[in-house]
Image (cartoon, rainbow, N blue to C red; front, side, top):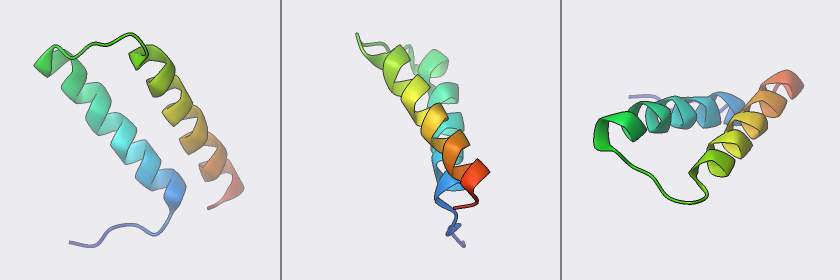
Length: 51
């Protein structure tokens, strides 16, 4: 299994996995929305920058 060297794609994959697990496992805590938003923003910026 090869892990991507592109940090933006790695963050995007983490975001997709976590956003899929949240409803399945009924996860929730007070900063979840903020954390997911920051993760998505960081992934988007890094993908745009090509990193």
